[in-house]
Length: 328
Image 1 (cartoon, rainbow, N blue to C red):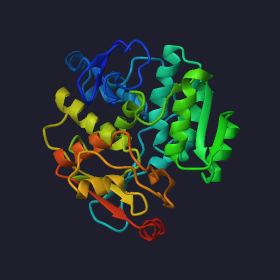
Image 2 (image 1 turned 180 degrees about the horizontal axis):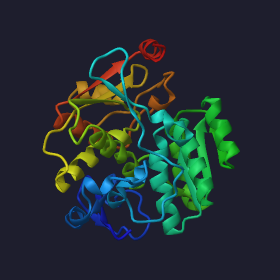
Image 3 (image 1 turned 60 degrees about the vertical axis):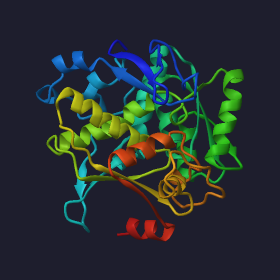
Image 4 (image 1 turned 90 degrees about the vertical axis):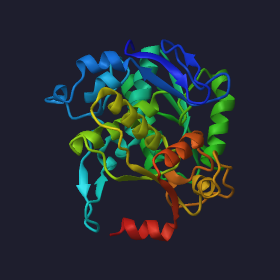
């Protein structure tokens, strides 16, 4: 972990020791980001140094924790041209292990959990993160304790159980699952790897941004449209662009970041429309897009900051519109 200097609170700027497990800022509950010695990285990490490296997210090892990776081949997914719109590309994250971009975050988080010597991990999930945690924990020989809403997609439930995870089904939403994890973690000896409750899932997700830049010849797109539940991928990509600029790989240009939510659960959109700096919990959240059914993102303040900084926006679409686009 020598390339991670410290972890930093995104609210108050407090620096915390990266050599031991951290959750959130003890002062204000702020999300923690891993910070690297980018001046040292710049001396050895260049665009040319990527040539010949494996086509996984760990090709960017200088910008990831220096620990033995728990990897199942995640990352470097293709950019596919849209059949419906010119100059629009779709990054196909469904080709990751366990079928979603959640594999990236869990690869990094479980890598660090093993490096820290942790034995039991816990997380709430609406489905995809559960599958990823179960798979990567199994690969690392670590217990996984997963809390999911009772109406979670059956494919995710079956996958978790097949990897040997301990699954608890909850009558409620992911927010109810998160509360149960928080209440039981200390007494059960679990380390909580919930969304943004530890610093390294965002590190895995940021590799989407690194890949987008590399795959487009180190020129960022005009905009990135991102389905937003917890929003970790959006935060990670923005962090990636900041680090790439510091390394001289790209300039100051940034894409407009566009957060998309369902009309049945759109707390970020509502906060954006009202000009607020954080969101209010969404009541009676309901949408067919299980991953978007997040009543309040823990990092909502960071999401909204990024939308403003990028001159982006937040929009909500109906389930009917989602299904129509999916069936094209």
